Structure formats: structure tokens, C-alpha cells
Length: 621
Image (cartoon, rainbow, N blue to C red):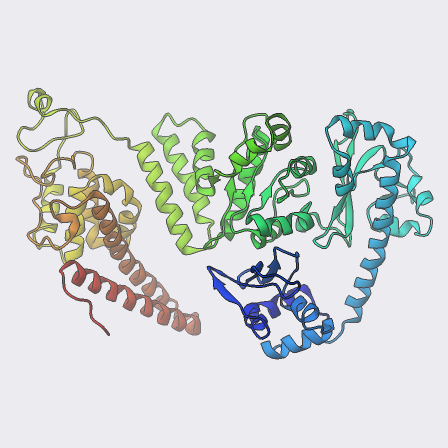
């Protein structure tokens, strides 16, 4: 087999870059990175940084950049294969034997890059010839400077179906077809793919030309404005980002990478001084492209056009990214004014206008909420329930359990605030003078409160006076009655508890019934002349005590509800696992061991939670 990119990735993952560099250089910890005076040039102020997480070193003074392999070749002076062998021995890996097939494939790629490189040179010459005059004038009208044309390699393909083989006679037609620059029809006829188009080279991460994009000069019916090379042995549009080889070094200095929709947006921003910009290849962002972006920045910024199509493109990228989210790895989104793309904004208002937007992007979660809440009218209960369902569908795709739980909580909080808005309560004088309202120290949100049914009232009374087997459940029910605005927030978790623990179902159903009538802002919201349940005598929990801040009560209630839900859910999972023991004894046994460990952990957390609230010291096991 050959030394594949995957093998090299595994090698880098097993080696700590800073450890290797510290063998010859003195590194000093600086936040999440290491710094030193650059070993590649003389300097007195450190500008050399080592990032173990991203597995690279970089000098902001001389531009030296690389990974652990390039460190061994450039600083230690080893050959590539000697560097690989030394690092592999340290990592406990075997160096793959040479693969003749892979070697032949690499040789073929090199030959094809020779073709695309010569084609690029020819396109550039055409632009500055008499035949390219109209194309050059068009680019000048677009405001592109000569240095920008040179930097991005603008060229021109003439209106001639057979121009390319005549211009590149040393390459046969089969190679021109294989690079995507010529098309072979079923009857064997061949012709140039790009004709009468402004040409832009598409380059890989090393800056080698691997494909082309062509733009027409004037819009014509039936003619695509932009045309890209097809996928070839050199080019995979789902694994390539336009301008990556320029944006990556810029991104290391800014700590940011910006994603726009097209080539011209990238070029306009680069001309305006914003260099850390890339674009996908005319399609939605793929998982591979997202991984490339996350190697450059923890939170890439999407800056798509302000029209409906641009916003849908941003949403497609978000849905593609959700399953891949991880701690410190997300997306941010800049929403441009309607009908404006980044190119327009920079040309009309200057780079400062765009920089201001890039400095304050929306979070991925914000975009989810705003997109789905604006997707359909929300004038009926059914439509509002549909909004909640759509949001939870997105949340369920997130693979990381912690991030999924946090997204669920945040979006449910926003939904609750939207679907169950705060209602103005009457003053004390209005409460006393309005027929149907209770007098004394009890107030209601509803004009005509319907009160609890006798069964529900009796159920909650028993739950909080010692009749319920779980002290924590009794306390939580009392706490939620005192803070009824929290009931809706935890409704989903409480429903899960009711399903997993039938003994708790009557109390939870009565609690939800009661949530419609309670007012949490009075000094004693859980008792009153109508006989609503009084708080339990045990006030060890902060959410049952007077004077507790809303934030502290909210936080402690959330922890208590989480603990209540986890145990019956794990017990139900354990029962299901035991039931399938006969069909899968090995898998069932392993799953039982894992679940028992989790149950033990939850039991300890329950005990520690109770001791902590009682003011007892936690045990030191």
C-alpha cells in the first residue's frame, strides 16, 4: 500500500507536535498554543507559534508553516521517507510498503497537472491578446485591478471548438478530455468545453491548477453564466474550496475564515483587503468542505447573498453541519441586506461595511430559530406545534449528546417564550373588584380560573405531604408549583418521566393541569384559600425557600428534573437490554455493564444532590 493522506493523518494524530519541536527549541505556553523565537529566521520577539490541536506550526514573521513531517524535513534536514520512518517508529506504526498502483496514479496526476498548467498560461495570454480585448474590457468595467487579474490568474477561452489542441500540441486529445477541458461525444467527436468565456483557474491547497471555471461575457438564453470543469482525476468539486491556498495563510493570522457563494465574491473581497475568504464549487457545502473549514477556524462565517436563494443556501449548510458539531466547532452566519451580495456591498459601501457585519454574525442556533419561525405563518396552535416539531427534528440530527441537549433546551426556551407569552396581571384593586377572582393572597393569569379538579388536587397534596415514595419528586413538584413558568420549560422531560415511571404519571398530569392557573409572582404562590397544595415542611432545596433568586431556583430545578428523568430512563433501558439477552448474550451483557455503571453514577449524583441541599458535606469516596 502507499503512504496515503489517511495514513499521514493517523501519524500526525499520534505525535504531539510541540513535544517534537521542544527537543531542539524552547517553547513557552501561551493560552492554547506554544510560542518561541522562530528557528527559521533571526528574531528577538517571538512570532513562531505551535498549535497541537490543529497540528501545525506557523511563523508570522517569515511565513514558515508546516506540520510534524515538514518540521522533520525542513528543520532536521531529513528526506521525506526518513522523516516518515522516524516518526512512525515513535508512534508505533508500520510504514506502508510502496504501492505500484498508487505510484502510477501519482505519476498520472503529475502529467495531468502539466496539462492544466500549460492551459492556464494559454488562457492568460489570450486575455491580453487582440482576441481577448472584449473580455478584458468587461473585467475593467467590473472594477478589477490589473494586480487582481494577475493574482487570480484571469484568462480567456476563444470562441473556437478546436482551439485547445492547436494551442497545446504536445498533449494528446485523451489527456485534454481527462482534465475536463475537452468533451468527447458518443460518436467520437471532440470539442473544447470552454468557449468565449472568461477563465479562472481552480487550484488545490498547494496552489496547483486542477480545474477551471468559466464565465460568459453577456447573458444568453440557454447558456449557463458559470461553467466548471467536471470531476476528474485531479478535481473533486465536493472536496475543493476555491481560493483555499490563499485563504489558509490569511486565516492563520486573522483566526477567521469567511465562506461566500462564488468566485467573484471571493475576488472582490480579496481586492478590498479581506483575504481569508473561500467559496464552494457551485454546490452546497459538503461534509468534506466543512472539515477543511474547521481546520482553519473553529467557527467559520457563512456570508451568502441576501436573497431567498442565499438564505436557503445558508440553511442547507447549517443542516449539513448539525450532525458534525463538536465542542468549540460550529458555524456563524452573516445575513446581508435583501438583494445584496458581498461583491455589491464592498463595491457600494467599502470593505468596512462588510467587516462590521462579519464582526457580529448570528449563531447557528439563531439562524435555526429565525429561519424556521419565519418559514410559515404561526397563527394557530397547530402551526406553532409544527414550528416546535421542525426545530426538534433539526436538534435530533446533532450527534454530540451535550450539544444536542443544550440546543434542545435553548430552542425549547425560545419556543416557550413565543408560544406561552407573559400575560399582564391585574393590580390588587382590580383583582378584588373583578367578579370570579379569588380574594386574599391568591392571584390568577386567567380571567375566570377553572381551578384544579378534586382528583388532581388530592394527588398533588399527597405528593407533597409524604405520600409519594420519592422525596426529590415531591420537592420538584412543589418547586414547579412555586415557579410555574418552569413547568412548560420542562414539559418534555416530565412527559418522559411519566412514561418511564408510571407511579409518577398522576402527579405530572396534575402538575400540568395546575400550570394553567398559577401565578408565581405572589409572595406565597403555592397556597391559598381555594385549598391548593401547601409546600412541604422540608425546605432543604433553594427553589422551595423564600428569597431565592429566580436564576438560582431555575438552575437548581433544572438539575433536579434532570436527575429525576435519568434514573427511570436508565432502568427502562436496562429492562429492555435484559429482555434481549437470549438473542444477543454478548451484546446484552456489555450493554448491561454500561447501564449499571451509569445507574451507579446517577444514584451517587442523587445522593450528593440531596446531601448538598441539606447542607451536609459530600462524602470523599
